[in-house]
Structures are given as C-alpha cells and as structure tokens.
Length: 204
Image (cartoon, rainbow, N blue to C red):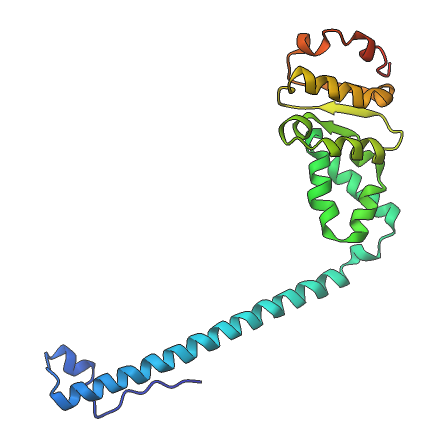
C-alpha cells in the first residue's frame, strides 16, 4: 500500500491557489519530490501490470474449472450428438457446416469427435464454401462424414464458372443419388446445359 503524503515543508494547493511563487529552495525541493513521485508511479504501474497478469491467469483457471465441472461433460456421446443436431437444424442450411466446424469442433477433442460422428450435421453442402471460399476439400469431408444420408445443395450466391460447376458435378457424381434437394440462386440455364445425364441420377 502506497500512502502519498505531501511534505509539510512544501507549498501546498492552497499556496498555489493564492498565487504563491516558490523560492529557489522550494523549487529544488519540489523538483526532488516530483522525481520521487515519478519513481513511485513507475513502481506502481509495474505492480499493476503484474497484478493484471495475475487476474487474467486467475480468470483463465476459473474458466477451465467451470468447463471441467460443466454438466454437459457427463452426457453420453449419443445424447450430445442429438443436442448438436437440435441446435444446427434450427439454422439456415447454408450455415450448418460452418457452425459445426468453427463452433462445435473447436470446443474440445470430445466435441469434435462427436460432431464428426453425427452424419446429419454434414448433409447440407453450401456452394459458398465451394465457389467463394474455395474450400474444395470441405466437399470431400462432407461426402465422407455424411455417411449414406440424403444430401442437400444450398446457396444464396451465384455458382462459379462453368468449369467449377463441372468439377462440382464430377466430384459429386458418385453421390448424386443421395441428393434430395437443390436450393440455389444461380443461372439455372447455364447450370443445366449439357448436364441432363448427371441430373438424371439425382434421387427421385
């Protein structure tokens, strides 16, 4: 604890308000006192940084403890997967995969494993990820983790170039019989040109 007491030998605030002008000796004493105060300030600032770091560490440890004691950690994987499904299916379908990857899979290895073992979380294929973010590997991941469940292709953006469209259809061709719905905002005429053979394979 630092107690800042102004020396009685120095002019105080009342002297300042009265227009007092320090003498040469008083000026030297004031300078010496100012140097002392600056040193104390530096010491206090250093201590504040140390205490701030301690508080951050304490808060981190408390978060870890709360997480370890959270009731959800005692849930069986099957029930946790049901909860994940309930949360995700309430979102727009084009957000399913992004939420699953960035939120559910980022909590801990247990949640990541449960999410990967819950096929319905991976059944909505977003064209944004494929053609805007260019996350081609995500398609392969979804086709694998969705198991044999029906698939939906969804998107609020225009599809990519004809070459990218062709690539999408080619890579999905072995799985087209699983596709039950396509919901896109795109140039349908350009998409369907010369693609009748592939689309005939869609699930009825």
